[in-house]
Length: 319
Ligand code: GDD
Ligand code: MG
Image (spheres, rainbow, N blue to C red):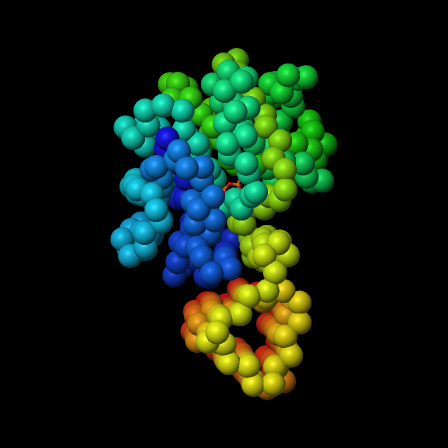
C-alpha cells in the first residue's frame, strides 16, 4: 500500500525558520515533523510518496542520508499545484486504495481501524474528523447518521459553520478519486470534496490527540502534548552544571549552566544555556545559545542563533 504526504506548502507561518528548512524537516522532539507521520504508518504501507515543491533538494538529501524503513519517492511540482493538483500529479505511482496526509498534522490516528471503517462503508473516500471549538480555520463537515458527509465547507465564517467537526487532514482514497480532479492548480478542499459527496465520502472520528502544526503556537503545543505522553528524556551527553530542570523536557547533548529549564523544552546537540537564564515552552535547535539572564518562552530558537545576555524572547521564532 502507498501513503501520500502533501508537503509542498511554503511553511509561511513558521518563517523565518522555514526560509532555511522546509516544514516537513522542522524537528519535533528529536525527529523531523514528517517522520511523525511516516513512523506510525501501518506495516502494509511499503512506499511513501512525498508531494513537494518547496526546498525539494533539502528533502531529497535528508532521505538519501536517512533510512526511514520504507521506499520514499519525492515528486516535485514546478509550481505549487494545490492540494488536489498535487494528488493528481502523483497518479502514476498510485495503483489502489491509498492513504493521504496533510504533511503538517501530528495525530494519534489508528490507521488500521480507519482502513477497516473505510472498507466497511464502501465509499470512494474516508476523511478523518476532529472536534474543535472554532472551526473557521479548517474544513467543516456535516454528516448523516451513517457517517456519510453531506456538506463540506472550507474555512467558513463563524456564523456560517455547519458544525464543529473538522477535516483532520488524514484521508483514505480509492484510486477513482483521481477522475474527480481536473488538470492544473486544484484545491482538494474547495473543488474536489464538494464534488465527491455524490460518490460517497465518509467521515471517521479520530481519537487521542490531533494538532495542525502550521504555526509556532501549534508546533509548541504538539511538543507539549508529545512530552506529556513520553515524559522527560535526557541524553547521556547532557552537561548539567547546576541547572534546575523542571517538568517534562527532551534534552540532547546540551550544556546547561546555573539556569532554569522547563517545562516543555526541547534542546538539541550543541545548545548552551548560561547562568541565570530561563527557558520554558520552547525549542532550541542545534548549536543555539542563550546568554546570561536571558528569558526564552513560547519560542523557537533556530540553529546556531545566539540569544544575547539579558534578552527576552517571548512568543517568537528566531532564525
Ligand atoms: N504538494 C503540495 N502542493 N502540497 C501542498 C500544496 C501544494 O500546492 N499546498 C498545500 N500543500 C500541503 C501543505 O504543505 C500542508 O501539509 C497541507 O497540504 C495542507 O495545507 P495547509 O496550507 O497547511 O492547509 P490548512 O492547514 O490551511 O488547511 C488544511 O488542513 C486543515 C487541517 O489541518 C485543509 O485541508 C483543511 O480542510 C483542514 O481542516
Ligand atoms: Mg495546515
